[in-house]
Structure formats: C-alpha cells, structure tokens
Image (cartoon, rainbow over all chains, first blue to last red; front, side, top):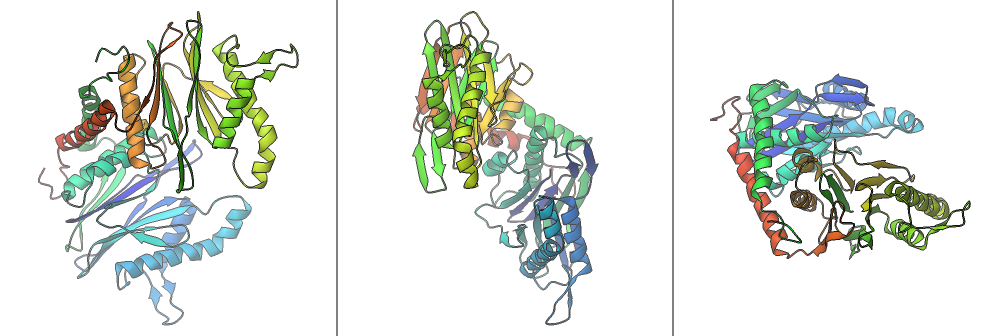
Length: 249
Length: 249
C-alpha cells in the first residue's frame, strides 16, 4: 500500500508520501514515491505515485525520457511543459502509453492497471497547482473548497484533513496536519510506513523550501505521534458520558 | 454504505449501526440494520448487517424461520441455539443457504455476494461474546487483544477505536467512543447516516440495558459531534509546528 497527500493552501503546497511497497505481506521494501523536478527559480514540480510499482516506475521513465509529439516532433517532458495543466496532460499521456504496452498482459494475469498520481507545483509567473491523475490518464485539479487530494490508502487519514484543513491554514501547519494524517494511516494500516518524504513549496519561490525525508526516529515526528495520541485520548475523555440508560454521566 | 461496530469490554457489549441504505447516490432510504433477539433474563443477542440489503434481509428471514437440521429434524433458530458459537454457525448456514439460492443469478448479473454480520450477545450462564460472519459463512470471534469488530465502511472510524478502546474501558465510555467512531465515518462518507441504533448489554443481565435509536437531532449526539470537532481542532493546534526549513515553530 501507499499513502500520499497533497495540500494546497494560500501560501503554497505541501506534498507527503510514505515509502513502503509490498507484494503480499512478506515482500516489503522501501521505494521513493515522491519525485521532485526542479529548475530553481523557474519551475518546481513533484509527482507522488500510488499503485503497482512496475507501472508507476514505467510511467516515470516515459515522462523523464519524454514523449515525441507527432505534430511538432518535440520531445515533451515535464521540464519543458508550458503549463502545469499541460504537464498533467503529459502525465496522462504517459499513463496511457504504459497502459497500451503493459495493459493486455496484466489483464491476462487478472491484474488491475492500478496507478494514480498526485502532481503539483508551479511554473514562474503562473499559480501553484495540484492535480490527481487517474488510471485512465484523466485528471482533476484541486480547488480552494477542498484544498487537498489523496491517493492510495486514503480513508484513515481523511477525517483529520476534513476537519483541520482549510485554504487559509499556514503552510507549516498544513505540513503538521499532513503528518498527523500520515500518522493516522500508519497506525491503522501496516502497508503504510516511514520514512516519509515531505515537500513544501512556497508560492512564487519556484524552488523547494523543504524537500526532506523524515525517518521513523525523527525527534519531531516521534513527538507529534505521541502528542497526537495523548491529545486524542484527552479529547474523548473530555466529552461527557452518554446520558442514556443507567449511565453515571 | 453502512457502518456497524461492536465493542466487547470487561463489563459487556456495545453495538452500533447506522440506518442508511443506498442504491447509487439517488435512491436513499432508512432501514434498520441492528436486530435484537431477546428472551429477558435468559438470552439476548443482536445481529448487525452490512452489504446487499436483499441478501441481508433474506438471511434474517431464513434465521427467523429457522433451518431444519437434517439429522434431528429440529428447526434451528437463534433463539433455540445452545450457545453463541452455535448460533454464529447457524448464521453462517443461513448465509450459505441464501448464497445457494441467490448466488448464481447475482453472479450472472456481475453482482458480488456482498454481506457481512456482527453477531453478539449472551446466553445465561455463558460469557458475553461477539463474532463477525463473512460472506462465505465462516466467522471469527472478538478477543480481549482487539476488543472491537467492524463491518461496512470501517476505515474512517478505525483510528479512534485503535487508540481509545481497550478491554478495560467502562461500558458507557465504550458507547461514547463508538459514537465518535460513527461520527468520524459520517463526516467522511455520505453513505453512512443517522439515525443510529445503539445497543448496550451488561454482563449477566441477559436483557438489553439500552436499546435506543439516536436521531440526528439528539441533544447529546449533537453535542458530542460538536465537542469532538472542537477537541480535535484544539488537539492539532496544541502540537508545535514542524521545526524543519523556514518554519517559525
């Protein structure tokens, strides 16, 4: 499994991804799922992936090598895309390319073409954006109403995002809430696990303000996990007992 | 969708179920999913169901009418089962009976035989127990290590159970935590909705101490939802900002 989330707030973008891959329960490895493409001061983009690792790696390779545009002859990559929207389209095209090559053999083995991406970033002079790309290569954009997107094992970590994230949240608070969401997921699903790759992009910097790997023994992350557990415990203890029946409320 | 949970603690059992059913997004109804079987002072049992409503209703009818034992000629129901374990077996048999009758036609329409049950209660002189019955009719029992079981849309409400429930939790606190888990699920999934049916069984009473329907406008449930939201907000606000990068922690 995998859990990735992207949070798009007024000051910028946070993206988080775990690093666990597993085939069944006993073939567990660490793979980077958050890939950063950067030309400092000009453009910074990141792609987080979930799903079948063979497919996501192939899509990444197709994107890095580039796809030739049959009309212009240009080799189209993320780094030369004129806009984030067109870059997202190129990801969709790469997904469809891999689907054409690998899809029939996977189908014959009854394996789903299971892949999804979060793609975010900024090109100088244009706004910061965040997209989610589906297995069919189509995609949606994140908006201010629900300023986050998730892929992979998204349910456990959604309640805290639903309650805590709004477009006005401070950028490092968004990172903190994303880490709490990651912690909730890790606590309930063994297939999501540290280290956590974290990226923080501030509007108009066009370079990563933060691009770090948070290890399991990171002192802040350990404290956050402990404090969140304690705070949750205090939270439900603070709510009165139900007044129904023979309760001594 | 549906969300049901059962929590088995040292003093007894709590079972909760929502009441929403939907076929697609626009055919939404209210159906009871928590069914109580009671002979006060002798036995009290409850069955919570998730999955295809046509299947769960058929299983319930088969169980209520009883299945003839080919060896003894006895009509076997939940009310005359010698033990909770044997009652759970009878549920499994009812599931298999319905599967035999309905399964092939559903398969022809590409509809999964999707059904699961939580079954809990006590027969006088024997311990309180809780089981989960799968679509194949097999089942597991709840133990003290993880003293809860869930069916239906279980992921959103699991983090709070994972953190808050232990076997030593007071019975009405277990009800409170169950309602928080229900609230987390309702907040993130439209397919789970009030009213909530709630059952509380205290050890050795062999009759329901509480068997109520909690409506959306129930004052305690409304307060719990508001307080939990506020407590969560306070909880993540109390955690310091990440110290990485340019954070003003």
